Amino acid sequence: MSANAINPPVMVGIDGSETAAAATRWAAVDAVHHRAPLHIVYGIAAPVDFGPNIAFRDIH
Image: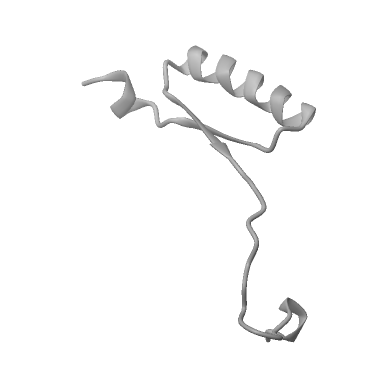
């Protein structure tokens, strides 16, 4: 059985901040320690269009 089947991936989310960089370093060390894959997810703010003249605050 492979190490990946035994140890689930370590996942970390990043956003470009120094805090996220520190979390990524921690996750990388943890992944190596557990012989697990490291999954890094980058989050961005995406513009959302609710239609003409509809603001987010109007959505219930």
